[in-house]
Image (cartoon, rainbow, N blue to C red; front, side):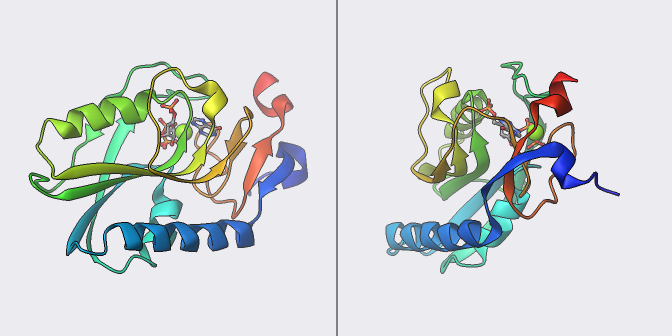
Length: 184
Ligand SMILES: O=P(O)(O)OC[C@H]1O[C@H](OP(=O)(O)OP(=O)(O)O)[C@H](O)[C@@H]1O
Ligand SMILES: [Mg+2]
């Protein structure tokens, strides 16, 4: 059983309703942006962005191709290693296609920067980035999303796809993790 959430969550930062309302709004901005295009390849970065991808894609009004990539930047815990390895690549060719990278969070920025550089070499028509959460205080490299859901303070958050040590992804809200959970 999941631990009692009072034991692990300091506070709920973004509740379920606010997430859904904001994601619909993001989808409508994305629909406007691509209104003259026929197709879009949405690329979710596993595993954190699965919930966001699912919710966002439901409201996109183009022919979309759902793709998944797995990269690894955090071994476990809360510290970024700065190394990004591709563990699972796209199943499709993105040459001359519109690509939308779908992320749950931009923290140091290393994951997305390396990924974008990698995908750019494949000659897509265009690459854009949408992230549910942006933690700008932690940025170590220059990368900005084209669309973001929420800017958040420098706290470790879990839920709606985001994990601590692979746990708590299934919480339906975004919560700040108690420091006692990872500082022991
Ligand atoms: O901006 P950065 O500092 O690079 O951090 C952000 C990335 O780190 C997390 O993924 P993680 O590697 O933990 O994998 P996960 O999605 O499977 O949890 C998160 O989902 C982002 O992809
Ligand atoms: Mg993670």
